[in-house]
Length: 141
Length: 140
Picture (tube, rainbow over the protein chains, first blue to last red):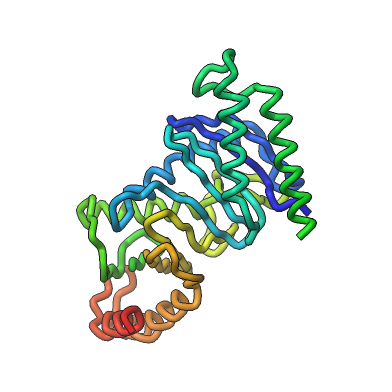
């Protein structure tokens, strides 16, 4: 049973540049995924405002009854977040791996324009491999 | 700690250790309630049941109920009662699951406020007993 349900990547202005879902439940059409991505971007920003101390970098983990949401924000403001089953482990590590794949296959691609939707085959391929490996490792534990 | 009713009126607010204050209290309450409302409402049904009706307003208690989120500087825990009373606790990020504590605070609310015949629902709470009990619970 897979732990990860979907992956979103949003650029620093809050636009969705990549969306992939892995679970059978939670499948969203394009409009819904765009809406959800911009919502998340705004909420992330608001949560930084509400911090009682300095140095808040936004929501990293959101827990609900039916899912968990892990978010990773890079230094440039690009946000990677995964929706997964409650209590899923090692999502932060997975997010870091996805970030590395992003820098390798997307940013180093000379035809990729910044802040545009990602359409790189190699990125998709390696991403599927990474998620598959994570799933296998999860089952193996 | 914040307590809101279903219309967004802040009924109770106490702070014990808050070094940074970016906004004035009114705006702070509004922002907090707004964030909570957006997080709770239907667009966040990321594992939705078969119909995916985004944008439909929900009754209190319906839909997926998130209970907390963490950032690197604070943890936000939340509980909503069936009557729409929302209790929020902002704590250190390493705090464990606070749902029991929130339930206890709600029981204090029921005990001291809801059962008070002189309390008009929707007005801010000024009950000294409630404040004292909450303080004891938090600091003790």
